[in-house]
Image (cartoon, rainbow, N blue to C red; front, side, top):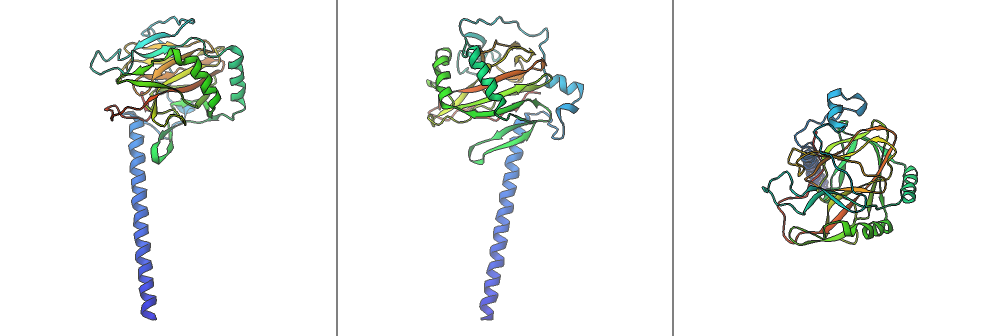
Length: 312
């Protein structure tokens, strides 16, 4: 009996040791994966996890909270029809294949004034979350909150709305590429809508959107997000343009700042267009972002899905 108890105790000790080792290995793998994501998101820039927007140096704030300068190209937005702004691969000079003829364009009216007002009122009842963070990760690992080091200052909330997605799809479908390079056909508007509010002094620093990001599209499991739509819900504010920026591998050859009227949108490709939410100088800016989905490629792509990557 004594030998049996001793053997049982030894077995329990060994099992506990094995389980403890497995947990340590799992924790180590989690740490390594998180570090890899943090490095991808940082994109070569230093991210001070302790930094807060209110405590930024003048130099950092000027890099994060952009206003247009004389180097920017001037664009008059056509309100009657969609309008190409940045050609696909404009800055690449043929070194890489562009997925579509346009990397950035503006739309005709998508929402009327009353619809914009309704969404702004809805935003105020959504308990918008203010925070200096972005989400990264995804897949079977899930999304993690990463501190931005003072790079994002706004209030947001993601909303799922299938009926509104159908409405937006009906209104925008004639203003988007019907297919991408390789014959990937347009599928539709995703069901996730990111509503954001920017008060005076708030901004979103230069970044590349994560390619394939865009929330949920439950009816298109074989589809991935390729474009982000930035729909302006208000326009009674100063500053707050969406900046499309050259450099760092961006498709944009010369920077341009777009500020569509309320109800209109700017659209850009995910992953390859450097952009920012410019500093709001006066008033309050409301926008909504949603995502355009295309059939997933039949063969693995060389341009893999990515997380958000900083450009400043």
